[in-house]
Length: 120
Image (cartoon, rainbow, N blue to C red):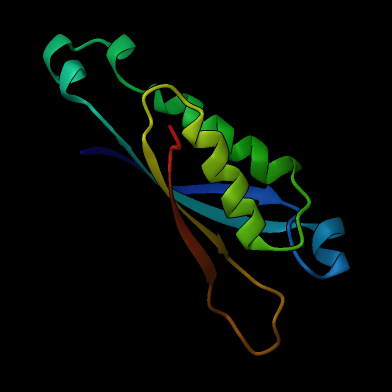
């Protein structure tokens, strides 16, 4: 199966367990892998025969910006479900990272990665 990779989609959002995370918000970074058949697009050179990844990026950005979930896991699931609704997409991998999680003495990222397959 073929893939389209979308990486480093940075968005400001309001997902988090702590009340201040849902009020003040924070930066998130999302990486997405979309599995779909790209063979027809490889032959026709037509956007109509592939996924317009601008729609996938806009879907991710919109969800991060408006969702107020307690868990990053729930945000990742919502993104995956929405991306599976896009035309031609058969499977997705979504990685959501909190770039600056509010944890004392911790300067790294926290990330959740899930893979989901379209149910036929």
